[in-house]
Length: 431
Image (cartoon, rainbow, N blue to C red; front, side):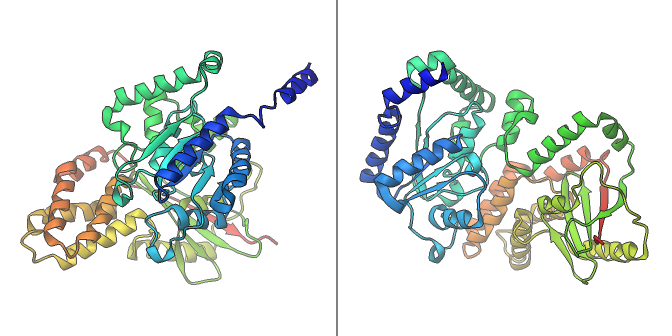
């Protein structure tokens, strides 16, 4: 039976005579003729489709097509940033590619705002993917084009009647507009809830998301452990807020202490290599890779002179300076805010907002309640250091949006929250 189907498919020559690809080609030719400066991003859910499109498009447009799928290499990310990210410094920007073909690996966390057209070669069952895809080029803080164009490929009426994908996607997009209002049509990361939060509100089942973000990875990992070891989860609920454990180091020849701190709703990590004096901030996802182990991994003795000596150094470091990566949004926002506070203390335009600025600083140091889009708003203050009146206006806009005493309300919510949880993992050398 399958051989007969394959024979019939071969006879139809669907690959050679692909009407969907022909429509894509027509759209690409239109935009390349209309605006040669407008780069184009094509998204598909499927790696095989991306590979197929890439091969066919390269025959037509040569090496002006960049194709990415599967695990992204450092080289891929560098090429993408250089050719599609408008936030990169002008001298570092390149123009080697006009068209980017990608899976949803790039639909979150990457700026593609030198592109002015997104083509959804297929419509995902999860409409949040569409929001994430379009959000890559719709960056109001780094606007390149006044108008952005979105091209959606839907199944034909005949195909839609079979799989019902058109109805499912349309209904979910309608739900988004009704839940969040018509402003949700402006698919911008700086103006709307995070896609993961949106998906939770629509389905109340974050476990089924296919995000690549850290939060979802942790949720999925937790749910997997919970399903396999339900008794373990019950034990975790009884754990004290300070935990210390030792295991074999995953890095041959290296002995490290990794300490996680959870303060209110923020988690951060510090690392100290036992043979060195420095303590360094560590991105949480990198820290997790150093402490993750199999259920059968035996615990080792942690209560040693070496442990306490290094643990104390980590705690001392934490007290002296806030353990944030210089690249983090929190650190960037804090740096900009400190500059405003230091340099505009005597400004009569900034003075009316002084209490609010100090509230922001307290939040950034102690409570971490600000979402990413607000942190970006603070970072943008830097653009107006030489335009004092405009800077005051931007501060006032943020104050009106949050409320001058917004942090007091947040503190009230956090009264019953454990102030700090500390988890120390001592990675001992492999013999």
